[in-house]
Length: 260
Picture: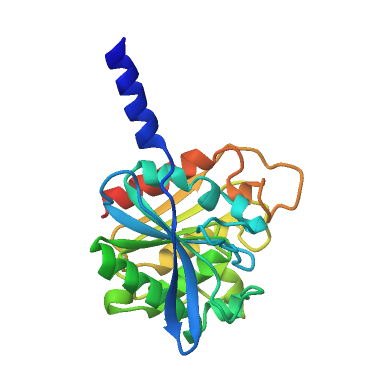
């Protein structure tokens, strides 16, 4: 009985949340990017930078905890699934000169790429492990721009675009999406029932095809869950994989581990 008690204590200890480390990463002159670093319980096999959609604001507090409404999004609220798989997570907030939020145009800008590149490089140099970027919804714009623009130490080893709104950047929807030169690992994830007008499921295949040089290149279409009753572009919708968050994040974790 005593051994069982000891083993139970060990399980509880290993499952206990790891305190986040809040870091201000210098990116551009006079600008820093607040990030929260959360390692897994053991040695990390890889690190994942998490970018939410909307205006990108997480409002990380002094302990590194996200406090903004977007914190309920599944890539933030279920990040424990990534850590349980041995993947360290980095919550990336908006830069100090964009505290009110970032718009899609800024996500594609050189300034934002300097921000993302600074964080990617810092995590790579500090932990010496592969660095991935996961972006949901408008966060997919950040992720796609990083895959297109960043190089050397700033270049992510792999990217995951989930319910990405990147197709909205085209001026002519009838034209093919510009191809990406990116050769790392790519997963494009979408839900078959996503009713958000900015991320129709049909776009997912077009985005995946644009990453023709990526290896591996995986298109993952999910089904199931619940559409909810609110705005189809907000949390608690199929756009955010409502009621199947763990399954989706587990798929992300498996893909990262297979391509680390």
